[in-house]
Image (tube, rainbow, N blue to C red; front, side):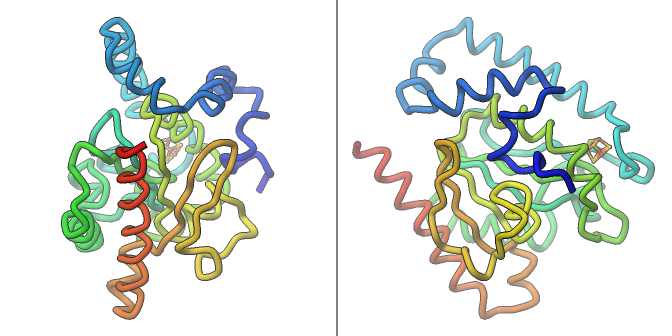
Length: 233
Ligand code: SF4
């Protein structure tokens, strides 16, 4: 695994010209910028065109072997101008069938938590590290993740979230750093290149271990509090 497959290193990636734009976004991802962008119709139009082009490229992608067995490419779901970007691992069977992330049992649990904590539906977007289903729901390989991460970076640029939530160890590995462990860092805010990142458990882990549920709720409550801070500042 090369070191450039985590977010903090993506400034240095040379093959993707969009990374240069990402740098400026990271330096300027203030609320004022978000508001002014939303107020500017021409930029909204441009954003819509960029999403169309992005969707077209991802849907036709065959950069890694996961394209072989997919039924759908799973790009994401939620608000296109979110405060929070949730990042999971990869599509499971239901997600592959429906072309949407987090629509199976784990997704229902996540939706239940977000609803319970009163996250507005227009405040978040949900995506994954890889956009095609790994066979048997296995963990994506480093190579697969590395091939797919440029798409997620493009999503950052388009979505401009103020907070990122890593759901589970795979998201932590590729967003925060491969040396980090979810059990050690969950529930603590991490700042990387201007991003505020909250690592927490993947909801699928809660299905296997009920004891993690309360911890995940606590972590998501911190995210909810952060959004309230934004509103009052
Ligand atoms: S997982 Fe990502 S890189 Fe691999 S084929 Fe699907 S969209 Fe392309």
